[in-house]
Image (tube, rainbow, N blue to C red; front, top):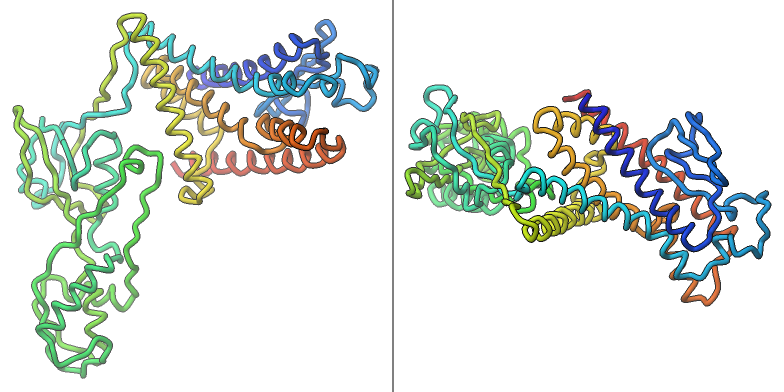
Amino acid sequence: MSILIMILLLSILVLVHELGHLIAARSFGIKVDKFGIGLPIGPTLFEKQCGDIKILIHAFLFGGYVSFPDDDKESGVPKDSDERFANKPAWQRFVVFAAGVFANLVTAIILVIIVATIWGSLPSGTYQTYVNKIVAPKGASVWSSGLQPGDRLLSINGSNVKSKYTVYLYAANSKPYDGKADEAFIKDNYERIKNINPAFSRDEIIPEGILVKLPEKIDEPAIKISDDALKGVAIYKNKDTDLSDVQIALRDKIIDKSFIISDGTLTLNNLAFAMSDGKKPLNVVIERNGQNIALNTIYPDKDGLIGIMPNIKEDLVPTKNFGKIITQSLKYTYDQTADILMILKQLITGKIPAKNLHGVVLVTKLGGDMISNDGLFSGLLLTAIISLNLVIFNLLPIPALDGGQILFLIIEKLRGKPLKEESVEKISTIFFLLLVLLMILVTFNDIWFLVQK
């Protein structure tokens, strides 16, 4: 049932978008031939003539369209008719193209206002993380750290614990002996090894049977994750240097040793790499009984776990009066839009790979789960965020999208005349096919993610 509700909410967003185009077109006296929900790919599920507009619902539901006489070469509407879209002033055509995204923007704001009014609060995007239970095996560092159930985690490696991902990301990316090491740390370890073994150079092969002293093992530098990555709008990338197979094997040999006997292949350089891949510390500060306490160092295990069962609570912003409802709803909409733009920037610059692109299949599944677990209000807020995504996506200057058509209008104004109809049609068709391929890609990503999960 929750998935069906989510499908209904997504369908409403498509309907609202196309209604924006329809209402704007009719208000300027532009004739509309067809109003379609879905794209004309595959079978048509529903078709009915309503006045002078044909209503269609297609099996390929990912999209929608409004069709004008200009789109039909056999249309009976005269070429010079004022009812044709192309014969309208550029500013009116701009309004028609922009009306869809404007409708989605208004819808997003209205949905947030509804939640703020009925629920009496809005999510802040910041979280408090408490320790519900320590579940690590005996001997794990968390037991000797001083951490106790009921403690609130304030910071890890200097990052405030404000996101629900903070603890997971720091622990998962601080696995010991991960086959990587910090380049500066490798250099420091080489100098330490060289100082107590001055007879050998960096890449010199040390003869078999020679004893090589090892300095005291020290922790790798604590990692630092950006606020954007902790918030979930960027991906954390480990920039450490990979160890070779030889260096990894050597690393395993020298764990907890103060010296090693050369086997005739040993070099100081390989030793420096091997010594540099070890434990990564988590420096945690907690709040207990109103006091901030720095814990003893915690080390994640080989699976990137520290052994706690957290209790994560999101801070809510109260919206108890009309002024708060409006201001906080607009702020929530603004903040979500900023996050979407940040993610888009990461995608364009390649910082988020194409395999992380997802679409309506996964959104429907996750949205259904959210409604089932967290209630309808969470589903409404997710729908508002999706509506904002549609606003930004449709404004991209890509032919076959509203933003692309607006781009053609700008070019028309700069040239003083419109582009050739055949050229616009060819360009739009090419990009339409590319968008279909993109939909196929994200749908595959969605299905693969759900199968893997």
